[in-house]
Amino acid sequence: MTQPNAAGATRRQRYEAAQRRRAALIAATSTALVAAAIVTLVPMTPGWEKVQRSFFNYDTLVLTFPKLLEAFTINVMIFAWSAPAIAVLGLLIALARDTKSPALFPLRIFGAAFTDVFRGVPVILTVYLIGFGIPGLGLPRPWNSPYIWGSLALILTYSAYVAEIFRSGIDSVHHSQRAAALSLGLTERQVTRDVVLPQAIRNVVPAQMNMLIALQKDVSLLSFIGPVEVFRQAGVFKSLLADFTPYVGAAIIFLVVTVPATRYADYLMARQRRDRR
Amino acid sequence: MAKLKLRGVIKRFGDVTVCDGIDLDVAEGEMVCLIGASGGGKSTLLRCINLLEQIEDGAIFLDGEDVSVPGLDPQRVRSRIGMVFQSYNLFPHMTAIENAMLAPRRVRGLSRDALRPEIEALFTRFGLADRMEKYPDQLSGGQQQRVAIVRALAMKPEVMLFDEITSALDPQLVGEVLDVLLQLKSEGMTMLLATHEMEFARQAADKVCFLRDGKIIEEGPPAVVFGAPQRAETRAFLKRALK
Image 1: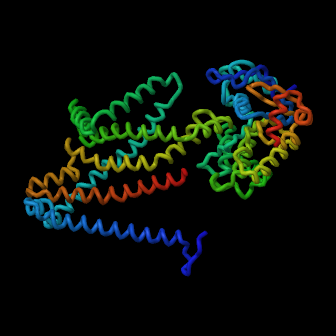
Image 2 (image 1 turned 180 degrees about the vertical axis):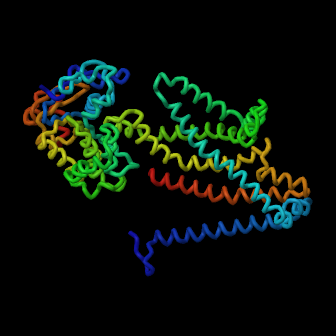
Image 3 (image 1 turned 45 degrees about the horizontal axis):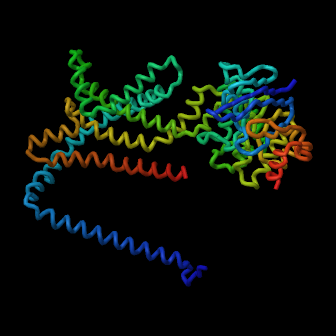
């Protein structure tokens, strides 16, 4: 039996409070040790001075950062029109792969082939093949723009992944939901649209958030076929100033966007796990 | 003529025969209870009647029309037969009233505004008027199951099937759901139940059927089946079930 002491805490509560204090102390000590080691050891490396000058040059950062930010708007633009297209195409492919009608058999085959191909090829390769290949057909302006075909490469690749996530979401809706909806006299189509999809989509929001974050980063791959987005812009500055600091600047810009987004996706994921319990 | 008539219904899952030649008549306004151990085929039989499962052989008649013809459009039949499940199966992303309005909106093609008065009346009739705007996870098990019944009734079914609808409920919530069944019976609904509530079946059913290994091996008025069972298997089951 636990006896409340003067403070009103039980034996168990006092024990756990002590454990927590101990854990916090250990964590703080080990963090301080690691930080101290980095701060003292890294500057002792032979190349430190040079690295500091060419990667962490404050003046260069201040000089180039506004231009980098400007270039980043191109990333945002490409992201902004690709993401909705990916969501729609991904969902359509997921639905195509789950159809049962014999008339739609070709669609099912196409959906399977599509996901196999675009998940099986490295993104950069798809960007090259589509981004250089299709304008190579000699299309007139503006149809030879790398923005269009580069975006298409991203859209195709990401749709393949997003479609698979949607499919797993559809599978995650318990079959009893479908039975209940059918028993009310709804058609298969109505059941999918009104009962299964809304739940499926909600179930995969955190996973799709992670795809969006990955997409945001992969937009930079388009720099290899032309668009001067933030990574390419940083490269231009590097050549111009013989200084790698602009790359660090670009990384900072990415982190400012992706870290909150990642935290938010993790939060959604944790909340979902809690709800499922 | 029986409202619902089953003749020689056979259902197999692979090598297992779950329903093995079932004959059953449910008259208009009658409440028939299927009893028997789990795995006896009660639930599967109900799912077959609602065409959620396809039967291998035999026939199911609704108002004299064979609804088990292969290739028949199941939607039309299902909208005439309501079904309530053990695990409620409410749609978690919709409020109670949206749950109840979905099928009438889609199948009967009515607007929310046109439906609202009759659906609200249903909720009121079953004491759920103050729960209409709640989501399923904000309701108790008993309330969820009553909403599931309202959802099925919203399609104005001619027959209602109940698949062990109190089995997932805490004992103190069973009563409110069984009361709904009594209310429906008094209003003349034709009902077929799979149930483990022996006391309820004894008091409320017009006919009780004891299923074992996919066959109805004894049936009759509850007074006879419970009071003077003819078969040794029935006696053994009741002895265990009524303990």
